[in-house]
Image (cartoon, rainbow, N blue to C red; front, side, top):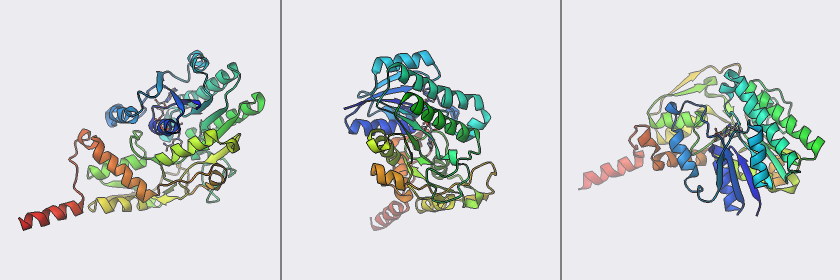
Length: 346
Ligand SMILES: NC(=O)c1ccc[n+]([C@@H]2O[C@H](COP(=O)([O-])OP(=O)(O)OC[C@H]3O[C@@H](n4cnc5c(N)ncnc54)[C@H](O)[C@@H]3O)[C@@H](O)[C@H]2O)c1
C-alpha cells in the first residue's frame, strides 16, 4: 500500500483517480483549493462536488490548500510524506487560460514548481505524475499522433502545460526526481462541471436545446471516458516502465461532433443541431496514438463513445441533476411506446 497525494483530487478527473486508487487499496491524500472557474451560477458545481466525494469522503484525507502557496505545500508534503504524487491542480480550461494568462501561469507553472521544490525538500518521492494535455501538440499533423509528434501549442493553456512538462523533466534530470507525464484529451463523464463540449451536449439534449456543431460538425476529438483516464493515470503512477516517460492516455479514436450528436439522437430523436464554422484559434485535433501506453502499461480503455455516452446519460438521469436543472426526466421512446400499448390494453 502506498500513500498517494492527489492535487486537484476533488475535481472531475481527480475524484475518479481517487476511487481507482482506493480500489487498489492505496492511501489517498487530497490537496485541493475547491475552485470553480466556470461561474457557479452557470454550473451544477456544488451538486457534482458532493457526488464526486460522497462515496470516498470517509476513506481519504482531504485538505484545502492552494498549490501556489509554497510554504503550505511544503508543510503538507512534509506532514504526509507521500510515496507518489499525482498533480492535477490547474486552471483546466483552454478558453479561460487565454483570457486569464496570469491565472494559467500561476496555477500550472508556479504550482508545479512549488510541488517539485517540496519534493526536493523531503529528499524525493517514488514518482511525480504530471497531468499535461493533448493541447501541447497544437494542430495534429500526423495522425494518429505519437508522443514525439512536434509540440506547437496554439494557446496559453497548451503553452503553459508544455512548459510544466519541460520543468518536470528538468527537475527530473537535475535532481533525480522520477516522473511520468500523462497527456489526456477531451475527457467526459459524470460530474464534469467545466462546460466542455460533452457536458454542454448532454445537458442541452436533456433541456431540448439545439446543439452547436463547430467546424460543420467535422471537428474531431479523441473523447475519453473518465474511468478509462483514471485507470490510465493509476497504471502510469505505479508501472516501473513508466519512469521518466510520456504517455497519451485517451480512447485512441478521433470522433466528430456530428457523430457525438448522432449518438445522442438515438436517445433524443427530436434533437436539433446547427452547424457553425470552426474557430481558427482552435487546434485541429483527432486521434492520439495510445500504442505506447498499451505496450508499456497494459492500458486497455473500455469505453467507446457509444458506451461512455450511455453511462454519462444514465448518471445525469439517476443522480438528481435533472431536477436541479429544472428538467423533468424524459421517458425513453420505447418506454413511452410500452406505456401507450399498456394503456390501450386496459
Ligand atoms: N478534462 C479534460 O478533458 C482534460 C484534458 C486534458 C488535461 N486535463 C487536465 O487534467 C487536470 C484535471 O482536470 P479536470 O477536468 O478534472 O478539472 P477540474 O476543474 O474538475 O479539477 C481541477 C481541480 O483542481 C483544483 N485546483 C485548481 N487550481 C488549484 C490550485 N492552485 N491548488 C489546488 N487545487 C487547485 C480545483 O479546485 C479542482 O478540484 C487538469 O490539470 C487539466 O488541465 C483535463
